[in-house]
Length: 148
Image (tube, rainbow, N blue to C red):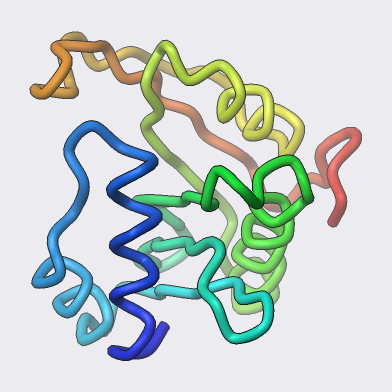
């Protein structure tokens, strides 16, 4: 992700999340040494993005979204695959994330990539007072049905 990608990312944020991240948050993410921000584009238009941090052998998936008009085309799978393959090739062994309990589509996608439920953060999302499911994946094992 480059600074010029942020306007497209913000559009996706606003249509995807009740409390979208701000432009400043994305600018900080791009500049952070620990964070990786990638975009998916079609005809030079940002259609999806992924934001994650890497510390030692662990990935924390912070955010992933695809524009609603482009969903169900494998873009999120492509972004997750890229994250998991490139980081595991550099020594990452684990990946973790939090996901809204109500986000059934995302949960199914994460399970396809080997993530398993390991805990719950009650009322984690302040905007909706919704619980977060904590999921982990062991990157040393290839998940069933994944596109890796």
